[in-house]
Every structure is written in C-alpha cells, then in structure tokens.
Image (cartoon, rainbow, N blue to C red; front, side, top):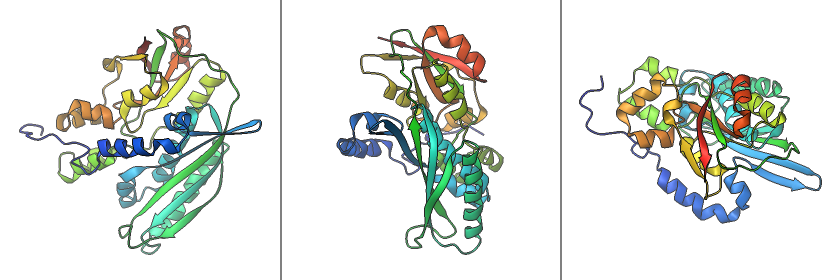
Length: 312
C-alpha cells in the first residue's frame, strides 16, 4: 500500500499555508495584550474579578461530520476545542455562545443544526456551563451547498490560585490523545480523496476530540501543576513553547509516546517534521510540574506519561 510514494503530502499542498498564517498572526499581534496573545485564552480583569474567554471552531473536520450525519461529534468537538483551552488557565466555565454560518436551512441541514445545538447544550450542562445564545446566518454565496460552519465562544472565571514558577528540571507530562482530534483535517481529507487511506480509516479519524478539563482542573486544585498546554495546531513543541521563557529549553522524548496506527499511516505520506507540526501525534494535552509531583499526577490521570523536562 505504501510502496512507490514519490511525493510527500503537506498541509500546504492540501490548501493550508501555516507559514502565511503565522506571518499574519505576527502582524496583528500588536492589537492584543502580550500576555493574551501567548495564552491559549484571553484574560480580562475587572475590579475583583478575573474572566477568561476563548473562541474556536472544529475546522474542516465539520465537512465529513456533516456528510456522515454526526451532530453529536460536532457538538462534542466544539466544546472540547474551547474548554481544553480554558483548562490551561485554571478557569471555571460559566457560559457559552455559538455562531453558525450555513448555506441554507433546507434539505435536512436545519435538522442537523438543531441536533447539534441540543447535543451542545447537554454536554455543556455536564460541565455546569450554560448555553446562553448564539446566531445562525444563512450565506449561500459564501458557504457551500448542504454545509455549515460553527464556532464557539466560552467565558469562564479564573480561579485565584498562585502558581509556582517554572524552573530547571521541571517535568513535562503528556496525556494520551484518542487520535487526530480536530486539527489537520484538510490534510486528512486530501489523503482520503487521493485514496491513500480507506473509508474505515477515514471514519476512524472522526472520533470526538478528548476533553481534558476535569483532569486538568483537578490537578490545578491540588496544586500539582505549574502550567499546561492544549496540543492543537502547532503540535507538541509549538504549543509547549508558549509556556516557557526563551531562556528555557524543552527536552522532549518523542519515543515515550505510544504509537497509534493513524499517525504511523500519516508518517508514510508526510514528512516527520510536518506531522509533528500539524498533529498531536498521540499527546493531546501536556502539563508541567515539579519533579516531586510526577508520581501523583501519573496515578491521578489515566494514560498519562512523562514526555520530557525543562532545561535552562
């Protein structure tokens, strides 16, 4: 199946230019507070309150999820992409809004949207978070027929807990992912369209993004971790770099990550460096802790493992 591959696939060849996006982000970064630009969510302080807000969607993964009529996974992914970011700042979710841009509400699309919202409300309720409203916009000249896009906006309240500063020899602990999650689907879809992966494998990539909020908030509550990173676009290294100053080095042992079949397949068609930049590669979330807390964390979080350490 993998013999005779002459040209490697990339995110850019599938239509997504990471370098161009990074350039644009760099150019607009001056519009944001430096702290919020580096964080996984924005922090807003008002008098004695400190709020955290984030905004995210599920990217082009929504295309096959609509095709296979999976509104439950659309909703779960939308919550995951936002609440995992919120978790990195030790915040409690308060309320959520959604924005939907659709081609039309005809031909059954309205039913999928309705089911998505019902699932969304149910999942948010399980985290004591309220869906307070949103917007549905029909834009037939922009959105393809029989499709819609969705984005979520989550607001939470930051817990008032002091964190120890990251220091030399602190430990990086990763939590296992359950596959692709919700990043890199332009490349996944391209491989499927070119018949490099079969339909069963493709459907397997649509498993819902794992939600780490409960485990992470428990670790913060027990004062076991200093910082945390949601491993989405940018991969393991790119997201961990957001946690440390430039004078620190991240010593990562990629061999510690358990192999997953989908990532092994991707490595056959995509350069290793590209794979680790686009996908989580089996590590869906990471935390940094004092070495003395490692055993406690590993016992509290199933499928967690030591990924590396901080050096300076």
